[in-house]
Image (cartoon, rainbow, N blue to C red; front, side, top):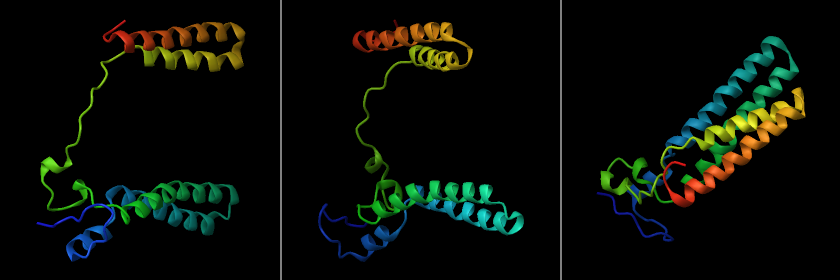
Amino acid sequence: MTSVPPEGTIPEDKAFTRHRRAWIVEARFLVGVAVFFAAVCAMYWFGSYEKAGSVLLIFTAFLGLLPGGYLLWWSRRMRPRAEDRDDAALTEGSGDVGAFPDSSIWPFVFGIGAGISASAFVFGAWLGVLGGSMLISAIIGVVVESRRGGAV
């Protein structure tokens, strides 16, 4: 079993250092997405010589590289999580389980109201009144439901 030093200390244990060097799964996945889209961008550039598509593929590669690099940077500086260690027990991964809200219709009403309100820019102000009233009723419904608990 690997002993994990307390937080803030520099580990001297080789097993801990080996785990510390391991990438977390999320960083691997996102850096892999970046590498894939960079390769697709190179093939696209040499195959089509189109600038717009190549720029979009470069930005798509950055969409994977930025969060993947951030996660990689933090995975090198934090203690290994239970899900990243092979010798972890099931109880190590379970933390505090909070209270989850009941199912509610109000987020759906809010989304429909936002969609109708956005449609008012195209079809007229009368849709803005309808969508705005749905948005206000959804906000009131969420607040009342969260204060009382249960369905409203």
